Image (cartoon, rainbow, N blue to C red; front, side):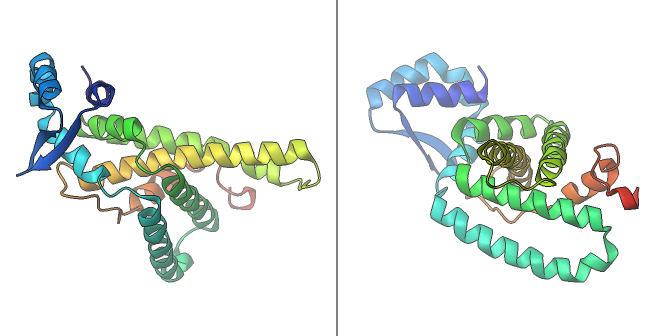
Length: 223
């Protein structure tokens, strides 16, 4: 049983698990909890720390909290960017900012989607951070290229153009959000009492800088 399957099984049974003394504890229907424990004792033991981590990090995941954080985070990065911009290629600054806005928008709108977050923290814990991050950013770059090509011909009066524009925005947001979850998982591992969303996006900048030409992100005049 994977960790995601364990979370789904708990949800299916309607069981409530809290963290007390650093360890997961069942609350509510004790008979159902005992029956679940009897069936899944090995899995619960194996994922004990990850389950505690999952509960702690998702406990305060509200849209209001995400919106407040995103506003503060964006303000902080804008201030830092003013000092760094003279030393960063224009294409890299441009795409990094689009990536950040997509990621924050996805985080606000989607939050820590329960089963996606469970899968991400399990994968990061098993050493798959780099693969997950690179894949999400490469997929985002593909959509970003398509989005910028699409935006080159502005036709806001054309319903088909608008629909395509919205589709590309949604796809870019999804991949940036997935990359954001990987950053969150890596930043908060192995066990956190609550989610700390103040991640460092430096790894993204380095990945874009390394792969930008191959991914078609470098402006033609800079190629």
